[in-house]
Figure 1 (cartoon, helix red, strand yellow):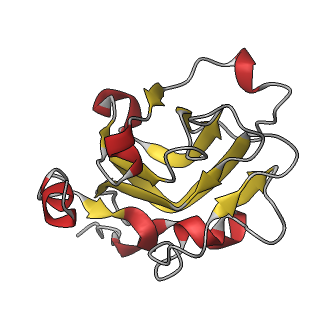
Figure 2 (cartoon, rainbow, N blue to C red; figure 1 turned 180 degrees about the vertical axis):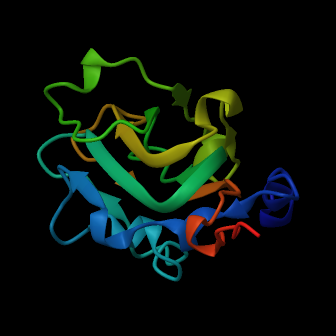
Length: 177
């Protein structure tokens, strides 16, 4: 699948939600100190095949992504190699402070088993109804393609739209006449 074909599977009204990530609140448990989350998430870094996010002690990664405003999440792109790329990816909407000890206590909003096409950039379309008013997203990468000790993620891209909210500061009080 070419990059052009992959891009066309993202719906026209969906945008890359990169600009709406609250970078100061990002967390990634079990990341390698020399191969951190920003390698897979930040513009420019995630397009560089020499940079990736790697797991440290075992194959699992737990990623917390807060947003600066409420979003609707439509699809996700997670790329990696055929051997060490992620396989089972569980997504949790608006679930904060998760750890490896309690991640299995909660049902995921959606689960994706990544195919070789997904690892090359084909988007995973999510259960859209489960991702309508998202303030944060937790991504649990449970295992990888070959059951090896290290999982490598080349790129994570989130596609969706912002939720139109009322700016309360912009409202003016109506004076009695």
